[in-house]
Amino acid sequence: MVKENEQYVPRLYVRYKKETIPFLMKRFNYKNPMQVPKINKVVLNIGVGEATQDEKFLEGAIRDLTIIAGQKAVATKARRSISNFKLRAGVPIGCCVTLRRWKMYEFLDRLLNIAIPRVRDFRGVNNDAFDGKGNYTLGIREQIIFPEINYDKVVKIRGLNVSIVTSARTDEEAYELLKALGMPFKKKESPTI
View 1 (tube, one colour):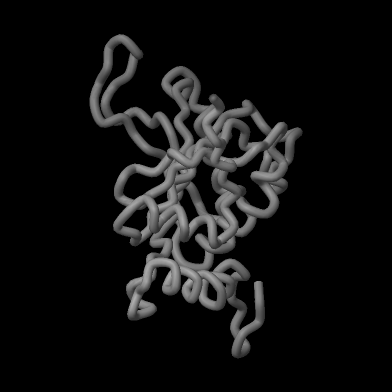
View 2 (cartoon, rainbow, N blue to C red; view 1 turned 180 degrees about the vertical axis):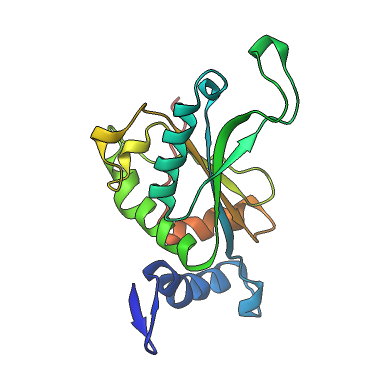
């Protein structure tokens, strides 16, 4: 957090205002700073299929996601019944958190600078995980890469999805926005002949 006018502002937000907006205005020839894409929200999601048999798995996932996000996670319920998976409509099968404003910037700062570099054999995040509308989804295989998680209290190692929703109209704008904020994308490989 950076102190600005007696109010604490996340570091990533300051970087967005001072470095990213001028860079993107020059890169895409925007005439107005309001045209520059921004991050609207970050959604964290954990699917817990074992929760249909034992409720403790869901409680552990909610606890871990709450610690990671800094905001209370809510249980998500099945929309319809699927007999092959022994699943009934309305049964809790996962949990999610939606982060906005300062909490969103604080989480992204921790994700980009602390958590992702702790991944074993890390070479960068996938360049192709955009949805065509300027949103990016990142899959994390282990929740224990976050330093807030106490490894001894983890019931089961599970993954989570991080969806970054931006106001960008194209994937190229979203790519440049996230890259300017510090997202460690894989280096583009030249084709070998």
